[in-house]
Amino acid sequence: MFDNTNPEQAGFDAFTAEKPVLRSGKISYFGQLAILTGFAGIGIVISGVLAIMIWMIMTNQSLTGMATGILLPAYANAAKLIQLVMSFCMFFLPAYFLALIISRKPLQYMQYNRQLNMRQVYLVIAMVFVGLFLSGALTELNQIIPIPKKWEISFKAMEKAYTDGVKSMASMKNMGDYLYTLLVIAIAPAIFEETFFRGGLQNILVKWTKNAAVGITITSVIFSVAHTSYYGFLPRFGLGIILGYIYYYGKNIWLNILLHFLNNGFAVTMLYFATKNGQLKEDALDDTTFPWYISIVAVIVLVALFKYFKQVTTQQQAFDETL
Image 1: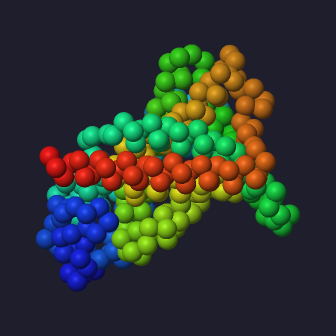
Image 2: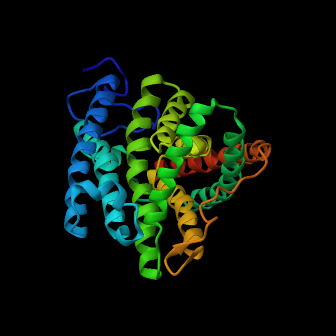
């Protein structure tokens, strides 16, 4: 579990060029991954118990009707609160408690930096725009990949369950519903998921493998699989890659949270305008697609943006060192 021979764990982080505020006990990367996985498992159990309690208190319904009832628009507020609590327990708390074990300043360890470089912010916004085209092209590619008929039936059933859940939570009759949905589907996941996948999992894997591309790729695969959507696998994988490199180069998790929020917030806003009298239009949840070759252009543009993003970050770090 303990590894004092590793230079990062001996007090120097080669990937951030900073001296982290680590505790005296040095935990190996395998140990960190095991702890994070264990905490995530505990979080799933706790969130499941809390979900049942919230359901029964808010709806006055029995547990037996929860599986189908939670998909009904009438119980949308209960579904949203359950989603919020589960996301907090499954993603934020495991990564936070791991960071607390490793460092005396857990938020700083996960790169919750206070200052934002506005040029970085503008570049992240540009990446969101380009990412929409990449996502649409990857969605098209995901759909045309041939798979066995049995798999297709299973994946479509999973997709329908996911869509039904989104329809339930996306029930928005007024601005208050819109803001609450924005909190549950855009703001909270942006904070909680980025804390877990980038501040927790990627932090471990990049340092463990000593290879940013490998660590970011593995994290992105797990990030996409966790959303349990085959037809959304490639778009979310692409999003994970973008988020991974923003975290790696930007050294500030708030930039990740910003991009994740804008990506999800755009979808929520489109759903809000597609809602009439609390009912979504039939085609509101249809995926926006672009020809698959658009992904090549999008990747080229993203590489250029990241090159400039890395340059801006380096300049910011050099400026900070002079202060």
